[in-house]
Image (cartoon, rainbow, N blue to C red; front, side, top):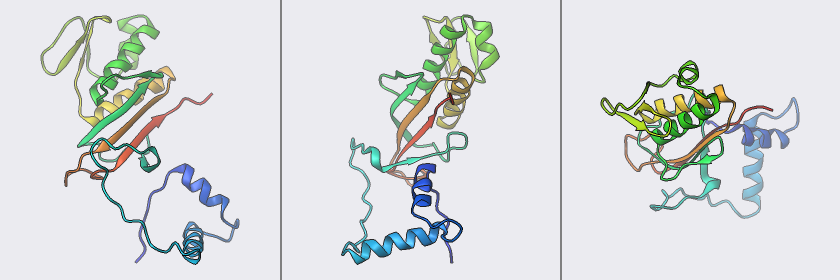
Amino acid sequence: MSQVIRISDDVYERLKAQATPFVDTPAIVIERLLDKLEANGKSEARSYTPPRKGEWVKEEMLRLDSDTPEGLSYTKVRQATFDNVELKKPHWNKLVRVGHEVAIKRLGSYDALQRVTTANVVQGKYEEDGFTYLSDQNISVQGLSAESAWEKALHLAKSLRVPVRVEFEWRNRREAAHPGVRGVLEWLPED
């Protein structure tokens, strides 16, 4: 029985570079690379061990499709930037708030912000129903789940044509999509 695996676009391009055009499939290229490893005496497969608390290794991150990320529940944001503004003590809702701060500064008014945001935002101070007040912008933004926060931040980034990036880790819980695995979501505007 065949298995389906997902790989990043970067890894796919690397696999294509190892292939004979119109002859090799990705499976053939992977098999050839494994044969080569085994022939060099490195046949012992590396076993996966969940990361220790606080350990963060960029090479081992799972890159998700920014438009359709899978299962962001039970994740902890490790690092995030919106329009190259690095978030201090990052979390999903802070990403949305910083995105709205950047947006209102760039657009110049609450009305202009309302035209580009898909988040629940009200003008002035409102701190009920999960809203957080951003005094510098005089707006309040409603809190969201991880999936919704990414969706709203991505929409703002695309509307403003600014980069957004989040590095996160799934908590070691059975309910998590990838317990203990690190992930990255990123969107960059095309020049």
